[in-house]
Amino acid sequence: LVHSLGAEVFMQGFDLATTPVEGKTPLFRQHRRFPASAVSGTASATGDLGTPTETRPTSYRSSQGILEASGRLTVGNVILANADYGLQDFSEIMAPKLVQYSNHVTCVCDRDDGALFWSETLRRVTTLGRTPEALPPEDCPAMSAKQIEFCRRHIDVIDASSMDQNVHAIRHGYFSLNTQIVTDLAELMTRNHPARQRSHRLVRVPRTTLSRFQAAGVPPLYHNLFSFRGVPGHLAEL
Image (cartoon, rainbow, N blue to C red; front, side, top):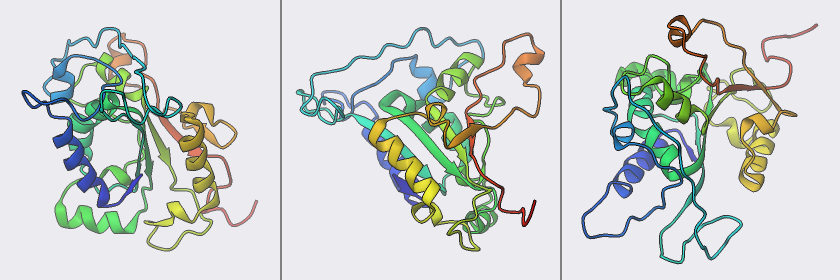
């Protein structure tokens, strides 16, 4: 679990650790396999992920799969809370790599995050933590429709913009204070349930626009945007 600018540090380290080095055993185990072009961010528009393959190696902690007998590490859940990390770099480079080397990815986002607003203003880049949208976006030039679909099925985007309990004015560090978020993340980390299985607390956000792939006759892509059940924070009375 990383927060804010910690996402930048984590992404750089994770990218370095998962880059193949000749003659050395990879540090992390691959959970899924698909063409390298989808990982490098140079996939063609007609690329095909094929059928993903997942294997469960012999490990010292079989319930979590933390360490293989070969010494390689496995990554369970990657949680990015209010991540101060570029949306484009995440979508085109790190998202495909994260779903390849981890079991699941969860992004907790808030469109009203004040700290990330100033970060975007100063750095002139759209941040992941302030973009509660289905990711990777459908206009991602680095991946085909099948590659975006594959990534989305292993990434959950949680929109926390409506939360108002134990939330300060900046709306940047409340993920560890808000009861609903803490409870939800606890279930994710202990039971490994993706957002679609945590329906007692989360609801899928409806699509609002027709996708460019639907317009071309392709079935709609998996929609991985969720929100917490509850009364929106801006409502004072009913």
